[in-house]
Length: 176
Image (cartoon, rainbow, N blue to C red; front, side):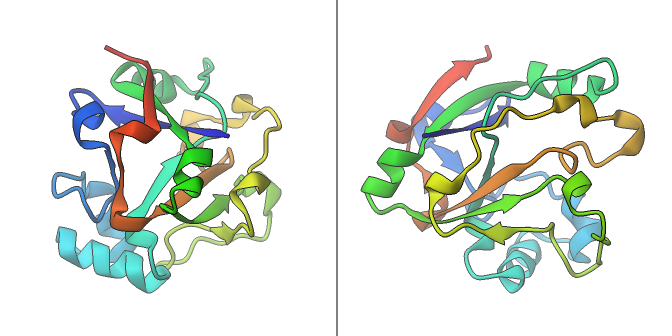
């Protein structure tokens, strides 16, 4: 089973692997300032860990490559400025590196969801990574005017031992 992960260009994922937030000292902190109330990498890592143990070692992935529409041109820009990598979950699990997998369902599927200051995003722990849905994603629900570009589609957070997916578990699928 595969998940797809995007990394902004330029990157060195094929040499160093895919880094979780905790292992990436160059991570873009801007998105997390408001959500966490923290202003440093260390502070945001601690906030992640207060969400649940291992959250700072989480790596986001989608069950299929991202598709953009005329309503979601920000996704087009996101894709064009990144490399897409597939992650071999079967191999990660076999080698004991996959600690847990969480799903963040589409907010459309959780109409009672209210954003909270102390929360990261709605994450539901799966019993097994094989529970990842293989149903096609409806990318038409993404709309730049509504904001939260990934809130309208399901995605997954894999918690990785050590916080880095080594290069042998990834394959570059597209990009420069």
